[in-house]
Image (cartoon, rainbow, N blue to C red; front, side):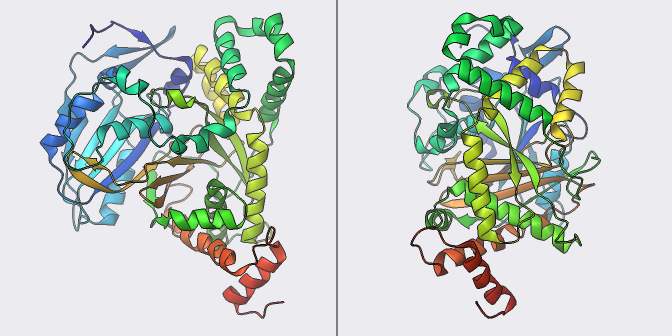
Length: 494
């Protein structure tokens, strides 16, 4: 292992995520991994020692100073402090696990140590569980999925041999389609955005007088300026039961998984992407929750979600750090017809994919990371007023994996929220299943199960329509509504 550097600067974007944390919204990515069978704690420690800690970032603490932030090795690093054994009280069932994860999601990591922790629950009734907490400044979701894959093996006989990070990062990314679904929509203009972002960091406003850029990328510059103005001048999201004053306690929930093959079949039937179908189901669940809580159907308005878009080139998929931008997606909560909602989501996502909004926010975060932290909070609060939720979809491996010799049955994660946003919706696919997780501020949504339990029902409406509607051309919205009225409300079809 090479000699430890004394200090290593934290990138400007990662500095922004480090400073984004506040008591009402901790910048942690929380996750659970449920095993099928016994998990050997000592074997897990050895795997983490050999593979996880091979990345120096997990032995470094983040130090934030007025003049900048940097990574510094923790001279008192203790793996057993970071990988802890714990037990659930009472029946040790799903309710107790949910409470534990909620408590951990509401508790800040210790900034005097490296910003990650794993809690090993050994008495959960359905099998051993790992609860993971990693600060967002270390990596984004795509990087963490790849990092997690480095801990696993395709068979239970895999041994925790040492792994050199630099060699591992240069290996061909397996299942490249895993990442292309998120990467490709953002590739247009990515080379320019990367160049522009670097110039912004190095030269600031001089970029606007750089003739070599202005001549070659005049159109892209204009588009990016328009996107920046558009993002900053969006109207604030409407005040609903999903948006308001935040507290410091979070509550998590997760849903029964959906078969990925069925989701793919629905997306093919309606000419949309898998992502469109899942977001439409999420939108329907939010709408139905609000109606069941007493909201007037005529008064339910569309709300925005910030959606991360990966800007990481495929060849760099295995590097740590944050390489994504954010887009504002308007969720059509005001629409009752599930097929119309799906078509609107598809239309709005296509518009966002064709825009430069994601590259703009990546550069914007880099610029914020350059400035003093006192200026960052009001700017982020301003942007967070324009959305009510964070919504992310991360593709995972589609074959069973083994960790420290034990098979992984199920996994889920919860995305952090920033500023004044109090709702986070996460979608993850693994081994032929699609899993949903939701984290909420308890002041706004005390029981997120009330939302997440509706995901499956909303998807099944689309599945039913896909089976019943004719597939020549795009199925008609009104025909779909007639069918649903007949089935759900016992009304005769028109």
